[in-house]
Image: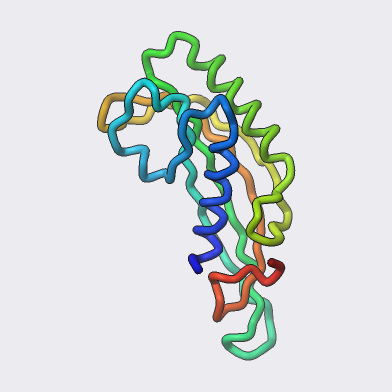
Length: 153
C-alpha cells in the first residue's frame, strides 16, 4: 500500500476528476510538461507533510500525527481572455466539492480550507499557464512503523 500522503494526493485528484469544469487532475510535477488547449482548466495537486510522533510508547508502536497542506493549483491557458472569471468559477466548484473530507482513505481530521492565492503566471514546456492555488490543511494518524496505514481506516 502506498504512503498515506500518496493516498491523500490520489484521493484529492479523484475528487477533482469528478468536477465537470476541470479537464484533468494531475500531480504537481505535471506542471512542467506540455499542455494542449483542451487540457484546461487543469488541476495540479501537491501535498506537503509534517509529522509529530506522540510521546511514550515503543519505537514502532508510536502513533504519529501527520499534518498536511494540500495545494490545488487551478490552471488556464495564458491566452484565455476571461482567465480570472474562469479560475474563480472553477475555484468555486472545488470549494463546494471539498466541503467534507470524505475521501475514501479513512478518517481525515481537521480538514480546513485556508485560502486562495492571487493569480500567477507559471512557465510550462508549452508556454505560460495562469494559476490560482487553493489550500487545505488536514491530519491523518498512523503508526511510526506504518506510514502507509491510516489508524482510523
